Length: 136
Image (cartoon, rainbow, N blue to C red):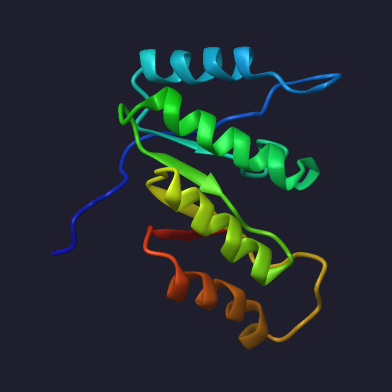
């Protein structure tokens, strides 16, 4: 039997912004509130977290910040999916290096292709990263 890594309720967090960028003070409040309310895991930088509008540096900083704030109290799943396979793998490896517990990936959007080609980036990410990969 496989070990269950994620169970229960995982909250997909919105990423709060100010006119100047990510609002880390408010992000900390969101994380702490979810933990206080006994959420089982946090999903950051997914589509709810505005990942498609964030720069690579914003994504990296939100991922690292979230891992530090949770400090192992709940698993963190980082949204690292996108259209560019190399960038997805690089962000996934970065997320692993700062301590995420899982990776949330989407098939490349806006790219018309065959089913085999849709699966290729997901397969490549699984080959190159050790964290559990979740696909949407």
